Length: 239
Image (cartoon, rainbow, N blue to C red; front, top):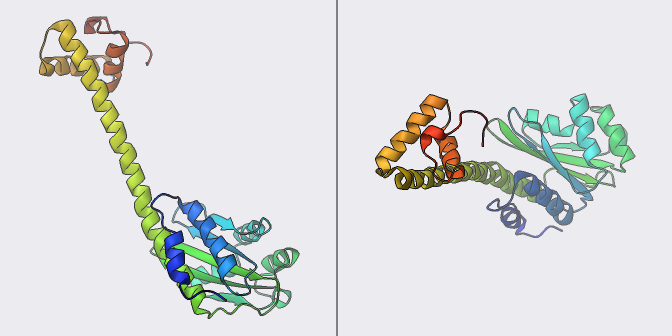
């Protein structure tokens, strides 16, 4: 049976302080297959507006079920997203709502499934649990709702913040590298021309405008030329 601290464990496992959304999905399906009673496999899908769905599965046969659902446009995950609540299939042998999905599930040995959805604005996460025995998964199990809620909050909140932080860090790193490049070239010009820092920077900006180059490109050429006077900087090619 699932442990009483399942939701807390899910939140800890799915912390994205140093992981990605895809890795979080993998952690989720492993946790679900291990912790949820009667669950023999699981898939999780991250749906973001304007982006292809990202999914993970606990068994190599299960990704095919998600692909069938995406291909035909109907299935438990799509219904769960549309309705906002759990969608269950007590027995795939008797399922008539999604014939393509039910046939694929039977080929994988799946006789029972339940899918839950967590939505936040235009983004959503679905978690599908599978069993080889019919009528063995209950959609009302509190552990399932706790698990999905904990995961949804972590992956769509923290993961988005983590992604924003990574992009900002890359921007800051690039800006810092550009400043360091310009400062190095500026120092070389000051030594070569016997001018002030302001005058060296003004000269680099003048070359940038005259030759339609970025200041960082001018700085790189100056560094590569080992302090050659700016009048000799070539206008062709890119370093």
